[in-house]
Length: 517
Image 1 (cartoon, one colour):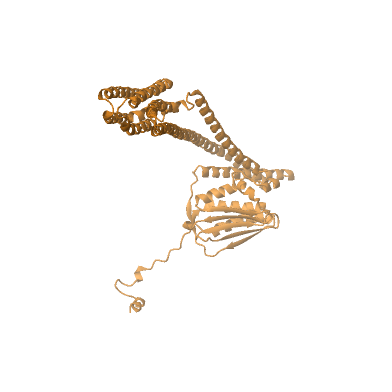
Image 2 (image 1 turned 90 degrees about the vertical axis):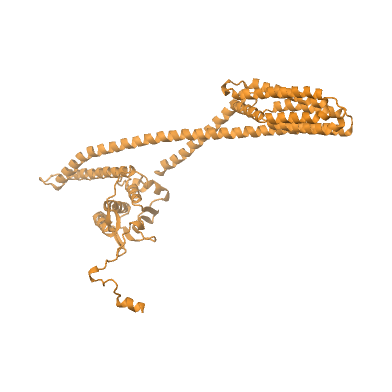
């Protein structure tokens, strides 16, 4: 039963995370659909402006290139078209192209909030249609050298359609409006020739028109996809910033709560210790019948219960304060040279009387001549006492307990406390290692305990840079092992030679002389 809350908490956390992800996805989808429904083009309104702005910028960037193309085509057509007619055509084409350039520049200078997308899209489409008509009239101008001009006109049609489709792909209807007049004029001019070749060229021109329009639509889809990816990236960045802000606020509140908890514990420990000391002192006097016999066996039993309860409450307060100081990072280690064997023997003697009442046998297996370690003796004493008291508490009568101590493979030292008790189920080990966690055995047997002993052991070993391992099997027993790293083992330094009896400088000893000879 004790592992149910932890399991449910983990499942609930995972479920809440999935629900939050699903809510964000649904919210994002609903927002996208709503924006697309409110848009005239089927995309997001923000995307409509970005796409139209990209179209205007592309047209401004290609304005000079198109002007040069008009000039080159006009110059090459001098051999096939009268100069007067060509001058009128060039003036009209350059005029329309210049007006379009001014329109693009004016649109780019207007803030996004003041833009009427539908009106500007209409203006751009009309401008492209006018340029296409003006440019396409070149192909229907009568000429005496029609056959010689066919190659030039065919190449000009393909080039102009390709350039307009590539540059204006962000606005497909403007591409259609700008290229369709050029294609129609060119196809008609070729078709009126009446030959098979002219029909073939006219058909190829129409096919090229369809190909470049499809290509323009595909390029627009790619542009929209890039805008979609950029919007998702910006949304993720915004979510991360919001989550970071929430995390900072949560951390600040947690720090304030931890500070309030520390102040509360410090105040309550003082307020509780004063009456507890009086309870323990007076109950010991009454228990020892210092001022005379009590005279009633029930009263003696009650005094003993009062004293034991007071000791249990005092131990609980001390453990809570120790764990709070460790978690707050205020537990200071008073490190010194410590002999593990001496500390373990002292703890053994302290627990011997309690073990004797249950007829338990405690065995010691210490490797000889273990060097000292650099550690906090009080913390190590508390660690070993917690492990021994747990073993004595949960080992049934007539059981056995082993205390082992020795070297680790890496050069450190370990202390192991093993019993042949009922053991702990594997799924309950994380519970007993958590603060105030108790296994099912402790609950069934109603053993007194706070569930703080093993968490304190683990925290103190972490402060020492060591490890704490708990292994257990049902009906076989439990082993708790603490391991100190090799860095805390104090090596025995070699003896310093007495310089008063050392040979003078430059004098070689006989042994060294024999080695040299």
